[in-house]
Amino acid sequence: MSERWFPDEMPMPAANAETVGWWEAAADHRLVVQRCTECGRTRHPPGPVCPRCRSSSSEWSELPGTGMVYTYTVVHQAFIPSLQDRVPYVVIAVELDGAEGARIVSNLVDAAPGEVRVGMPVEVAWEDMGPELAVPRFRPSTVAARERP
Image 1 (tube, rainbow, N blue to C red):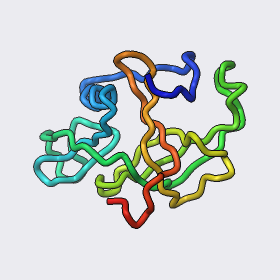
Image 2: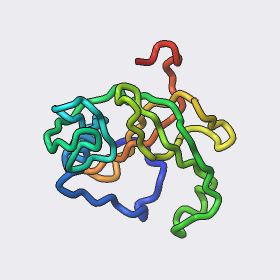
Image 3: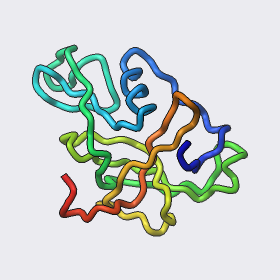
Image 4: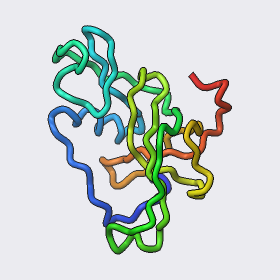
């Protein structure tokens, strides 16, 4: 089991036909994005058709799990009571390395809210919410920015 940053009372994500492959990869601690097999564009969140060429043909492409903070916000108001002792926390949008501009929204962990900066290199940190559910969080990267893909 991985480290836990958020309480069990957090709302669980819902999988659908387009996202089930993403959640299956996440359960194995693999970060993936959909890649169009016609034009090569990556997309996240997953969807039924490519926004560039409208093809419905896609595959899952594994990423290195690194990226940069594109934008962020510091949350000071707990939206469920069990988060009250965890505020403030940081919600970030990460521009993913190897995904040609695809971004994912998650949380910054293992860092104080005042440490986050736009452009900050981050790496995935998996939070196991159960035996078949893992959620990607991000922490400051231990890999120098020049060494990242």
